[in-house]
Amino acid sequence: HPQNPTSWSPNSTRTNKKIYNQHRATPNPAESVTFPKSAVTFAEIRSWHSETAIHVLRLALAGTFEKFPGLTVIVGHMGEMLPFMLGRADDVLLSRGAKPVSQTIVDNVYITTSGVFHVSPFLNALTAFGADRIMFSVDYPYSAHAPARRFLDSLPLSPADRVKIAHGNADRILKLGVSTKFDAYAQTAT
Image 1 (cartoon, rainbow, N blue to C red):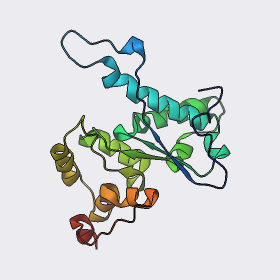
Image 2: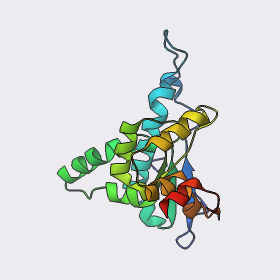
Image 3: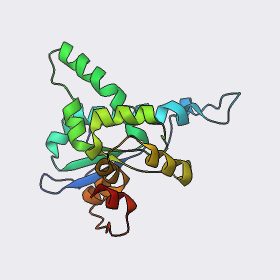
């Protein structure tokens, strides 16, 4: 909420690292219209993604990441339009004498690949956020595992970056403590 950007995280403090997974659940009723040639609602195609990106931009512009410096936000669906929007947001802010927002977002946000298994948006996300800020995700049951895995296997990445994206980043930020002993990606990266 613009008037209270921290209302979703009442337990955050300046000393504790908090991780928040930003995923919108209920679409705007005006965008829940089903189009005649499709069973898909407008919300599934656009509004979830753009509204989540706008929400993260609002968090950054409201100073939430400065107020809660340990806060980490995880955003799905290849960054929910953030990789595409960051450059434009900086240009607009700079043209009005304001501080750019992209570095604040990249420093505090991780993105997942969930449900977006196409190279072009991935390369945009990789360019905007870097391999250290992207985590592999499927978006099951809305997306199937097999195409997600084929996508991960086909990405133009170094073995080390593939390990980061496949599980290394998630292991690190979520403190999963997963062993790489039986991990084929980790074996090729060493």
